[in-house]
Length: 209
Image (tube, rainbow, N blue to C red):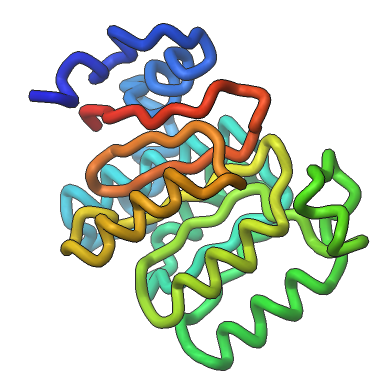
């Protein structure tokens, strides 16, 4: 009931947040790619398919150069991200020691560097800027997210999946909302979305997704 008034952006005062909810989160346009992806990526549950289509729209919206997919356990998310922005590089990171090493190497590689850096990132020199990250709450996700959050800019977007799984994940989501590095957030129940533009008034939106 609390989410119902934000289902299509209604009740949202910010024009920017309204457009994001209306034209990205709850956009119902029947993209041609959906038909193709239904055939290419099969065996998904209704919720996972719904999330995949959201990730397609997010990639189409952001047009990211670097996407980090942490702890996915499937290539479905990668397929939808790539369909949304074919020029993007999707880096899949496993939630184990090997994956954390790969993440550190990516962040230190300098890919996509120098792109609208904020005060938090200047201390890292020419390290990688992450445009989009999708995170499953597996393994040492706190460390992974904390490190990636120091490699963002004002246009970066993070997706935290399964924020309502249990009390621990809900508490972690609340901590992210309060983090001083984070700006506007969107609680979609199945996932949470973080933005990092501190020029926009900090607010958390409960969205009926």
